[in-house]
Length: 566
Image 1 (cartoon, helix red, strand yellow):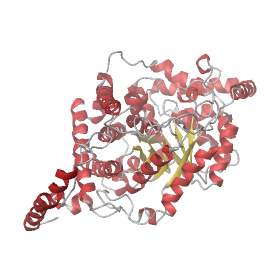
Image 2: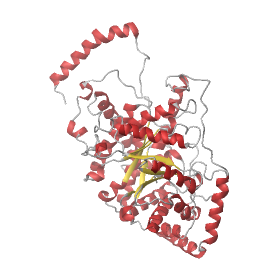
Image 3: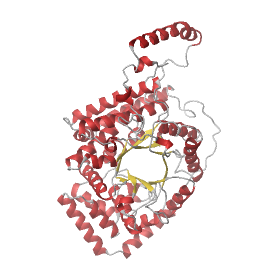
Image 4: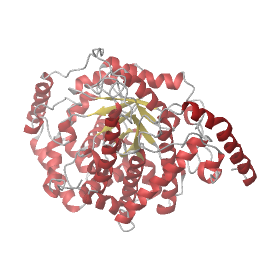
């Protein structure tokens, strides 16, 4: 971007500045600390100049917004056309209570729903299972049958809203329930909009919620993708999720690299199935974390778009914009929230949300300030939503497409982030002898991902313990007179209410029809057919989550992680 003569002049100017201006100040006053680094421990320079981006090729590395390699954003107008989708995670207690929260959020201006499920639902067991005791409705909404889904969306037209479902091992069942609900409401399947997390590879890497082993889990994910291409083309059947990888303690580069590797693994599995990359790739979405180091996060988002675009074209022959665009949802960093001085979390969340916006996210969830203590209260949820609205309407951050483009610092960090991401992906590809999918599966089996994340997490905690990494209110600026925060408590009566509804559904349904649909599903699993039509038939017969998941478990067995991986 600069010729050698310009760079020589800039180099001379910098040297003069260091000698005449900087050094006297350093000699007299020094700097705050010896080393400056991001949350991921990536060291940053004092100042950046055109020398740092001397090799940057504008067309190849940046381009224009809405054009490859999408470094500057996936759409030409970005938020000048419309702002990102504002989602707030909601789910607790019974379907009735969460339905009330949904209506409240819609009235407050939220533009997309995001559903949290309780642990039994996440793990594919019913509320009346012995393992569910004490967990029903506690960290999300309990969903056992289609009846719960009907109550959850009572008064809400699923043809008018975009709904996100944060669920993985039992994601196919929730997806089937939502499709069945759309059928009930008379909404054409091609109009159904939303996102299913459904990223099982990430589960084996970081979050650790699973039922069946990795390979059959991957088969079910590919079934949902294949079904969505044919039946619900506006619904994203998988959200490849780096969020939980970061929450487990990874660095920003590890989060991006492992997430993109999972994405490529799904691409390879779909292509092996015979699916056309131009048809299914546009339905892959991504889900990233946004942490405190604002420029590192912006660089991560920009570099991820560039890597995805380039490798989708080079490795998988994707040609269309739709197949090469990396579209993603962002959630602010739950791991960064502190129980001490919880109102400080409003500031953390604002910084993280701003990083997501400056980095070009397509949708955003802002954590509530009380989430380190309990499920978010209504007041805290409102503040979190208002944070997004203020950024969108008052800050001006949404008015310029990729406003940090051309910053010597941001472009340098983007290049450095890209290099580290690609190095990790190539390492994973080598594990699979040229296949990213096989490399991810091998990495899970060998404990590769666990070791990388564990080491990064340990090093971060060591820096916090030594005071090198400042956490305001925790290891610096502590206070003995913390303000008491009112927290949301889920009544224990919720469990009985859910159990009563489940018992009523089981009593009133046609057991013969349930058994017939489960037998058909078993035959489909055994025959290697796409399971989604059979799961939809089962939920329409009011088969339970646990009954459906038991079919998969009976064929594939229950997965147990090998001890001693880390």
